[in-house]
Length: 352
Image 1 (cartoon, rainbow, N blue to C red):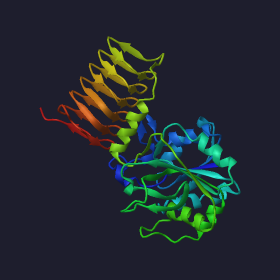
Image 2 (cartoon, one colour):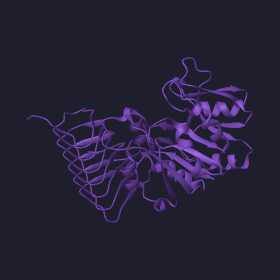
Image 3 (cartoon, one colour):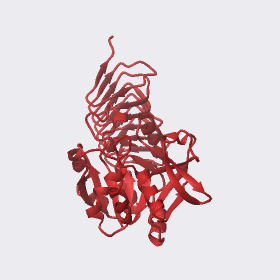
Image 4 (cartoon, rainbow, N blue to C red):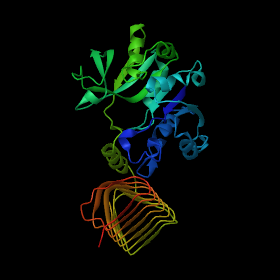
């Protein structure tokens, strides 16, 4: 079985962070989002993985490499325009060949992995399989219409949802799906929809299985989703202080990760929180639910429920919370309670 991870798309809902970078490389708990689907595919025994890329191909290649760091082998497949999830699968037809495959959206986070899902599909005679999850408001998702335990249709973003079962961003198919996609017409928004591909399989009499997961799942398409995923993933970390880290005159509470070369001086770190390699924390309070990227500098400040990306500075800020700061950003003197959304290379310096 092979894997396909969609790592293209413009990420317009994540601006300003995606003006200068791929949305799948935005860090959650100091780890790029794209790492999570790749790792889960490898954990499920899938090592031949296609990364579908678009205009940020160079950044994705540089960040992900050839796959060896993950125990995988990557093939980069270009999708010249963001023409839909089904189109992203179709451009991998040659890569897949006669194998079954798992299609995973590169900006999704599903807790607990997909090994069981992959194993069940491999043993089945189904032509497709989906993971569903109950959601409070399914109108923003593809929604499953069920008859008992049997899927009869996927309805895309319905005004009147037929159920509360959302189709999440993990699918498994056999190659027959390519015949269906090749015969599809673009939707009103000009895309080849994965819902139409699934419905096309059903119309052919193909078997498409579903399973409902109780596990947490987040589509990291918006800033609030990124912060929610950050909280969720930080909640799984275990306390670890790297041998090359320096902690001096400081208090660490709970699940705190401090990477090599980081320095924490005269500060308090309240877990869950992670401090990246080479970061410098001075006279500050970090956490809970804070991820400070590598090479960052935080001085005389408090940062909680926030993501501060690599090589950024926060100085004399008594309360930065519910915030995302892009790479190479500098914030000085922001007032208590500041909620900041700053793209890469931003500068905010309060007059004083």
